[in-house]
Length: 251
Image (cartoon, rainbow, N blue to C red; front, side):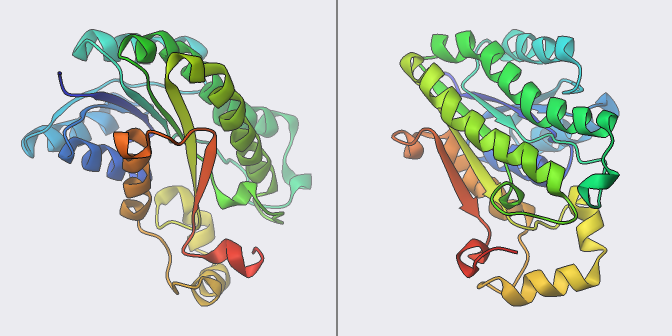
C-alpha cells in the first residue's frame, strides 16, 4: 500500500504546520496549504529536507472555487487522498458581538463553517476510493462556552462541532470518519490578540489544571491520532484538548 496522503489547510504556521510536520514524520505525504505559495512552499521544503514527501497548494478557504482546486491538486500530485485536516479559520474581530458587523459575521461563518462542509464533500469521493479515510476539523473550546471577546468566533466553532456530527452520519457509509479537536489557548499567531492580553494569559495559566498554555505540537499529536488507524472506531466526536480547563467550569 502506498503512503497515505493528507491535506492540511492553514498549515503554513501554528497548529497546521505542527500537524503537517508530525504527519510527515509518521509517513504521510502532506499537502501544505495556506493563502499564498510564498508561505506554503518553505514548509513543504522543510518537510522534504527532513526526508518526507510534501507539496504546496495555495488555497483561500473563503473562495469556493479554490477548495475544489486544492482537492484536485492533491490527488493529481499524489494519486490518492486519505485524510483532510481543516485547520484554517478566520476571526477578524476581538471584542464583544456588538462590534461584529454583517461583513465580519459572514466572513467568520463562511470561512469557518461553510468551507469545512464544502471541503468535506469535495474530498468524499477520493476518500471513499482510498477505502475510507478521515476528516478532522480544528475547533476550539470557544465553541463550548460563552465569551465576551470572541463570541462570534465561538458561535462558528459551535457550528463546526455540530457539523462534525452531521458529516459523521452523512459520510460514515463510505467508511469516512469525521472528528474534531477543540484546543484551549495555544501559543500561535492566530491567538495573538489573546496572548497579548497579559491578564487573560495569567488567567489561563492559573486556572488550567496543567498550569500552562498549549504548544502547537500538543494539538498536532491529537490531529495525528484522529487521522490514523488508532482512532478507527471514532467518528462524530469532538475531543477537547485544553489541559483540563473545561472541567473547571469554563472561562
